[in-house]
Length: 633
Image 1 (cartoon, rainbow, N blue to C red):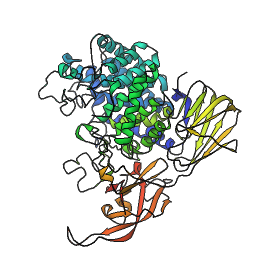
Image 2: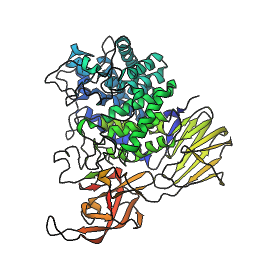
Image 3: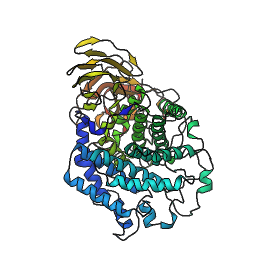
Image 4: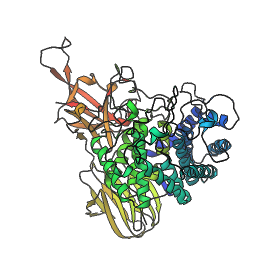
């Protein structure tokens, strides 16, 4: 039996940190997003996404509005709603989901084709521009939604729609070559295969992967000229093969390049395919790119994508904190990638990456009230230039209520709502616990309950409810320098193997395993080749990266620094933040500014008090400057 995730239906989360966030998703964010999709929130950017479906069904007049991939916002919302119905049954939401799915069904054409842009605006140009037009991307997201409604809510209407759509795509692209301009259909087809067992969908996903990069000039040969039309919001050059990773066959890729979300959706699909087929070459390529991204092209928060130009990776160690793009979708996709790598083999680095993204770069994409969202997640904000000066237009000091390109909000929503998918997995003789999130899993060996004070405290307790002969593999967070393990209160020694402790025994009902470790404040330093962070430190505790917000300081952030020897204390929540949040307090130094813009005088410093908060919580109070990295004296 290969490693498989424990089904979402078999995992219940009761975590003091994440349960309130899932409740926020079900009670606030999903209803709010639905209103936006229906254009019922006046202060938010217009979506018109559901109206596009009504027009495609012939039930409303007007012109298509929004991005060419506007359908995907609805698909991701439906996927999030599916998980919400599992978390919290809601008859009214269930009925609205059914009504929306029925509307989507009325849009589907006789041959199975489904896409509102081309149905409404360019009915004669279906499948003529795979580079820019996102037909396969939207189809992939709809397939994920159909699978989620089947798995989480027991609803099959959208699944049947997606089966017709998938068959239409297979009928066309089994016979002729096609390369998705934006990777996603590969994920959707594999998800559909896992639900239906139809190998045709797996094989179609593999074909799309196999064709990518085989002919680097494919998009040049197959993209029609379209003067004056901008499908993606900007021109995508067919010759820019690095942008969508189509210059090299997937098994031969060695470094992350181009559009970050495209790269990570590709890797998520490759890792899933490798787990399904046992393709070692594909898995080795995934491992190479995982190492390249996490060791050379990832911010300390887990954000990826350094450049606003094409939302892309650039070169090794080019990680400017003040111009970081760090799209929320890219951090969500990093979780997908790491999760699928864990299907191939248990390695604590993949679990550590999921943890880093979930508690930092991904979670920062949503306001604490669940109604505002970042597309871009910088590590430094200067109010004088952020969102204003050339090169900083994308760096915003507060979250907008919605975006013209609204891919990120529903992406993050479906991730948090489906969090149970990422906690547990199992194989023939082992149950794996990947994240210290309070939950209960019903596995093939029975029920296992885990209670934890994490992420604020370093402890967890596992209780085996039903007994049995199996191995319990517990991931030890990579930041834990040491730990203690007790089985039924008896201190035991277990070595860490690839980030996991393996406890093999015949379990009795009621047996417990207790894990404890210290969580001191850690100072992190960047590789010296990360030039923007040279001579600076970032603070971390447990899974959290911390940042300094101007609202908490006595001095300007640009003037402050830390001594390497200074003691850093933990304090309870600062003003305006939720109770229970662990913040940091320390003595720093502030530079006394000279009277002239440039002065020959030595810099004078005086003591000041500094406060730091978890990065995910920034921009929830008064707008102001923010830094993750601070100068070290």
